[in-house]
Image (cartoon, rainbow, N blue to C red):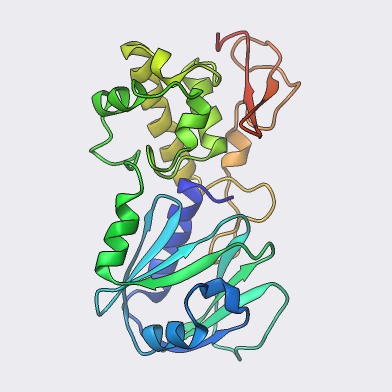
Amino acid sequence: MPELPEAETIARGLHAAIAGRRIERIRIHRDEVVAPMRPAAFRRQMTGHRVDIVGRRAKWIDAVLDDGRHWVTQLRMTGTFTWSDPSPLRAEPHLSISLLIEDAGVLRFYDTRRFGRMWVLTPDEYAELDGRLGIEPLSDDFTPRVFGDLLSRSRAPIRNWLLDQSRVAGVGNIYAVEACYIARIDPRRPARSLDRNDARRLHRAIRKVLAAAVERRGTTFSDYRDVLGEGGAFQNELKVYDREGERCGRCRGEIVRVVLAGRSAYYCPGCQA
């Protein structure tokens, strides 16, 4: 599932491709991609409008239209945008929606698992969505003090806490376990058990790993690609994620896998005690 670095990479690619251009025509190949909106309503609210800017909020793609409304896409597990030269808007395997952009090309959204969704939201509706999401971890507002205050309110394991999008927005499993490793913190520890120094180290680690992953255009294991069809490179720098049984590069201990809330977490018992 795309996390903050992958969504940021996709948003930047979309901005470069379609910002400042109008949506001339839309073909919806799978109606559920815009549910609960009706396909006709989605087309009506999008067609003819200019995309002013494409950005990211948490793991979501947020495109602002010329009338102030927001075209929001939730990628979910396998949602992928592709950008190509103008061509017919024909149905293809796993293709959910096609958008013809004026004087530019065709934007297509593919989704193998069919969980991805997109909607058009009014400014008030977008504000309601935004209010349900937590603080952005690469923003200036995300300070060690703010982070520590948030941690002190929860008994949840710190890995699970980091996945809660209402607390810190955009961090998923890959970057949560990598940040815990960098900070030398056991991902099973209760969030409120982290003292000021622990919180400061983890805060720094979160920002470090996310910034590095954005620079390397995300992590690709299988489905993730940017709008030009290229994968990320951060998978080559992962220290513990999906490395069960391998040796820790720091202490040479064996990396182990545990299951927290039904999802795998990875850590080194030797240096994340």
